[in-house]
Image 1 (cartoon, each protein chain N blue to C red):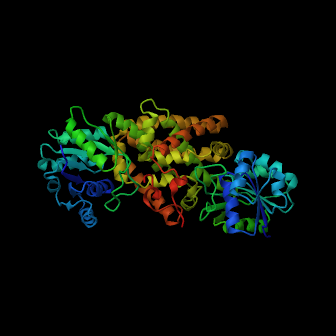
Image 2: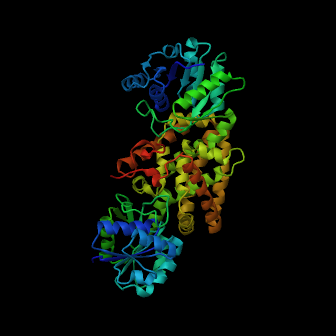
Image 3: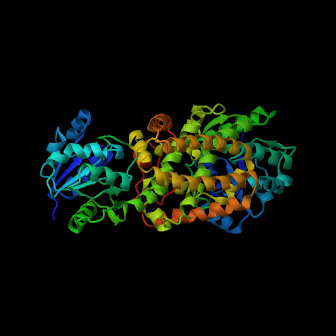
Length: 302
Length: 302
């Protein structure tokens, strides 16, 4: 199976980046896009996020071999129902959502007779909207494909190749496992970051202006994550609820241990814990999943 | 009062950066350094972190107008006692520690007849040791000076000017307030990062290799902070225990609220919280305390 025509529903950071990446890496593949927001469609046309930006979802997906839904996970079902009438029977329907069990339920319920193969490129920035996307977003980032039982192997292979062509590394796993992995590597970090930034902005003893001024001690890293799209993240927590609660409780157990070590002035427990965590950082840098330079190599002053 | 000779005790990330910054911005000022580790001294000589690297602490501080202790906060008292015999009566003794009440106690106890004026440059990277320092570390970062009651105003002014000359912005406040501010903007973020990275590396359902591979979803940001120096951070938590526990409990209260919102599928509470936190990020970027580019402008692939 060859993918000759891709349709992208939702032209924010992820959808826009896919459109730009296809045009760069797969120039022979036609691209069409749609977004429910007319202002986003207008901006998408200006930036050329897809070759065609349609005014109706059914127009965008017509004759597409691959449709990728790039909407918040809570909006997947509705987006799928909107394109259903125009989908070909061989079309692959995929997505980029951060929770895969719920996404598969929503898509397969809306499109019971179509080829739904969910996927999740583990890539992004704190920005959102039609101005945020760029063609290299997926370069050397992992994309996790979660083929449901009974998925057509040729279609799974085509989707895998598609992501590899955009520069991604691909791994397949089942949706439930994906949801646990991402709860740890993405959802809990976001929840924690959102929470501490909220805590810090509401203190009586420390002003908001002090929090902002003296943020270089570590806090500012959390604020970047906590600037991510609120709708997307609300939907992630609502849709990966069980895995998030499970992993959150593991974190809370460990945090209670650390709290007790501080209370009891148990320096040894702290030192051992803090030493162990360095190894994980080295692993991430070693396989090219983060910048090796100190402070991410950022230059925050000129 | 003019500072003509600076001594730096401890030649790691902070001490080394001060040495390099003085040589760059204040070429007329003499620099001498000492580190308890002979390997660090050898490397400090190779890099020229200070013009002179002495083999004994008393040699380094002789005739210094300003001595800056750049050792973990738990080692301040010992470091101060080691230099006491050679300190002039007009010498300013300062430091760079992350907790200021405990540092002042340790220093003033060891040096009851000297001019102790603690300070804390809110700057750093996840690296440590004599290879980690660089001259621009303090450029446009805040340095908080915490003059004790009765401090000589001329000496406080000289220390403020010294830090400004290295490119820093200076604010003075009392030590207790500093400790609360930094608990929020630095200590709790580090504690959380250390904890979640430890949690993630110990799960049965998700392998360590998966955590490393799929870290780009947010987790990798935490691993950078959790790669910081374990001795330094153990000492911070032991020495700013009360403020850390107070702020940690505020965070835990808020995290329980977020947990309940997820459990109860209360999307509105989450959405409101996640929207509010974006403003803090904008404030930090607006005053130049972080890189405005997405993902800190990092390039983690070539």
